[in-house]
Length: 501
Image (tube, rainbow, N blue to C red):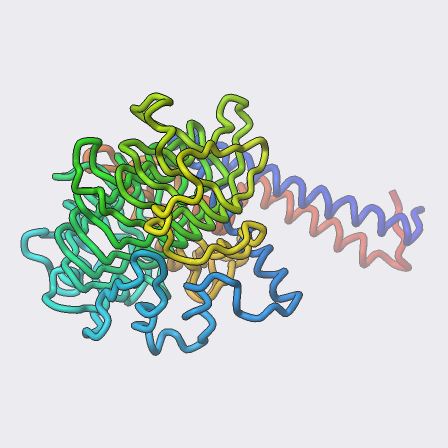
């Protein structure tokens, strides 16, 4: 005879076995899926890790702010200008008043009508379809462009943006990928805000994520950029009055080029501000790589590089202030700076300075020229903040999550964030294509794209890959659960709580 306490122990053991068996069966099911549907596993793992790390970092810092009852102000002058207003969506064009740095005069589509993009297709680049982003950016005069829902726009050819346009992705998760991707050429007054730009390939272009060519008064803010064929952001051929701020860059080789070539003297007047950006995982070089002009690199967070972080040629003036440089483990890659195509005697006269930068893990910046040279006035565009506040200043770098929430990982199709999520339920990252594993990157039934003819990374299906619900239990697991439950009920209702073995 067993006593009641013994029965409780047995019940606990049975429930534990039940749970473990379910977990092992579910894991085996996942492994079977991966075996039956080959896909680039390293891409999935790395992207998963980056997304989780980024979300975890943001959530932790947000929780600390709420716990300490810190006011809305973060010290980031751009975010504090508009994000503190809970009704910012009713006055979207106020964003144009919040620009800083050399691109502070960028008006974008301020004063123009609101154009709501409702169609993610790109059927005919030469005759844009009404309701598409291509149609919106080709409209005459100032236009403020917003998005009616989360969407992924797969371009066939570069998206050529005309003057006085704002592409405002706030309140939705908007991804742009494919041929191009965005070209700002021979225009002025353009704002690109809160867009995820990735996997761009050449199509009558170099395959940059965003290429600014012979243009002025341009502001790129709160975008996430990764995995493009050439640069993530390039500014060339006489472009100037540019601010690149609050962006998240990751997984790329040549990140940012500022200046066309070593023999294009038209870039001598180029002025670019690079501020409050997060240079994240698996970046190699060019953060930025500068030529000729004047560059203010201020209050950025550098957590990874392979070759170097900030480099240049053709005698650029680089003013590095209030950044955090965390060197990689490689003992031969601790130097932040890199002079290219020049010997020591030549670059010793270049005006490169570090002021108030935080050097970590052995990082060091090699200055040159005269640290108090008046030339730095042409490479100064804003007052730097102390580097000690980098975590706070870059807290929201990259695309802004709708409603600043993170959904329960097990809720089907909810995406990453609450209130609609980054990707709507059942949508995943991209409509399912050929090849890959079931699910999507964020929700259920989605996939990711490659250039035409190369298939998709992931096909549509149930469950999702990262944050959606787990696959159903196998038949044997379900049978075990039923038998365990029957046994538990039999033991529970035995007279006086005792039973015979």
